[in-house]
Image (tube, rainbow, N blue to C red; front, side):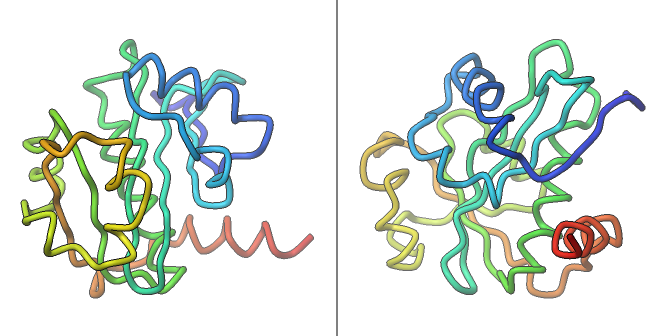
Length: 164
């Protein structure tokens, strides 16, 4: 797995991200609006993992964590989530929220706690994910990241992208 490269997604990554999400039975709606806050994991030119963020001030909706079936079991999802937490912290996000229909145990292992949907902030509840894309039966989870460290690789990537 040393050949995996992580970076913020580009418009050129969008078809690969959409295909991966569809293959993983995750919503693709609105993902094209999130490329500034989407991390793609690639092997060569193939997108094998992704994760996205919808920031709303100090809160954000974590969405679209997907890993290609042939890359699972190698901590790729965990690495994507850790990188997104650092990215979110750079944006000033302190609380992450997500909805899941079948991965609540996985996200609990990543530090997310189950909450009632009504406990999520109004901006998060107003997202398409909450309103229509995810079923009402989806589990809502939250994680306080306000004290988490920003990884140096994320800071450098952000610096390099603004340097040009």
